Image (cartoon, rainbow over all chains, first blue to last red; front, side, top):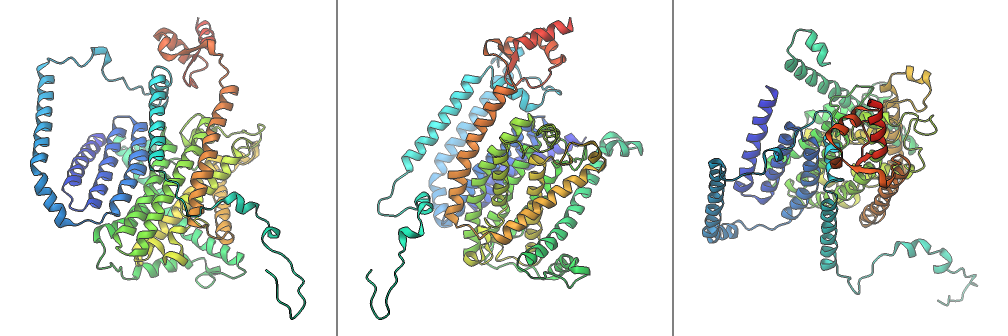
Length: 206
Length: 393
């Protein structure tokens, strides 16, 4: 009973907030609705017993990616009139995209219903959920044994992408003086100051 | 608690529901009380550090000061700036407050005294604490005012930066404990050092990350010396500038609930949680919740001590500390800890290692039901398998 109620709660909020992402006028509101959608998707994941994926969804998407989205969108200087003009201009393209997507959906579901497509062998369906082995252990056992090379190469690709992004955007600025913490810490009073026993009435030679 | 409500004649679902609600109330109300008292305690501490008397008017020794403040704030008018984004402006403090309460669901207060004993307890804490930034960012943006906005930008950058290193620090602890479950992590600390001391922090390999976690926790909760989001000399009151009355109080309560949570996390992850400090039988007569509270209070004293004595960091130094010092060190420490555990705990020769996929179902059944059902980190040792197979024959 509780499961059913929470499923429909999460699912309906998920769909409603996903719709609000598109319908919200203000981009900041869109991002916030997107966060609500992520959160409810995580709730659905918990319901099917995939608690590890659910937590990762919240940590990665809500905790990091969406914050960066929000960060960028908040600083946008939005001109609503221009936005609306752009909307009118892009309507044909958007409609075309929508038609293509709907057609693909209908075709896909239709083909599946017709039974013409075999989605793998019967054994290769969804993995059975074990009640005794925790999520993390099950995923880890599979990821670090059978799929170790795929997993590691995915990590490598991400690393290369990260390094690439840094190399492309990092610009060492000339002329501006950065702070060198080490040299600051190494600096001693005698390097910069000098004690002078100066007789009264004579100037100091600098 | 579910079984208690079941014995009253409820169905399992109704009993579970009632027990959960009761558990939430049992955590939330004492927590609010604790926050009120801890604010008083902290003001007294700061006063002592500054050779002042601190609050001493309301009630005996001023104990009721926080309640008087709460009442005053409750009776004030909520002022909403006309240029603000009304809905989000009001939601932001609610988010901060709710998130600060939510994480307490997985904190074990004693043996089995936990609201949600889930497998991914630590990940849940990480997920919830990563939501805390939204309260700050949304309030800064919705206020439609310069200083709150700067503060929101700072908060977003600061919290994301330190979450990364906190993640790596937690990984070290999880590797050592072998579980994400909070109760499991505490259980793993029993007699950890020389079979005598119940604390990961006194393990030489884990001590540096315990210190790093304490510092990161201060940065994550935006406490002094990392309270750049509300640096009064630069940003008035930061993201709270436009807030008044109850909305302001919610930020205030949320902040302290978060600080208490971070103290509790420190106590649980590195100082043995509800276990007594020393693994000595008579100490176990004292209820575990007492030890946990004592550890939380000691941690909180350290937080207050730091806030009273250490000057505020500069913003670029804060970022440097997060990205250039803590991140590399914690990353290296993950490497170090996992390497150490590989060499000492999982002494399986490479030639003997089998992947799960290579083990037949029959063998697997034998292995998993034999002596060594857990810790099959990436596969199974062939020798273990044989032993298990023989044993079952």
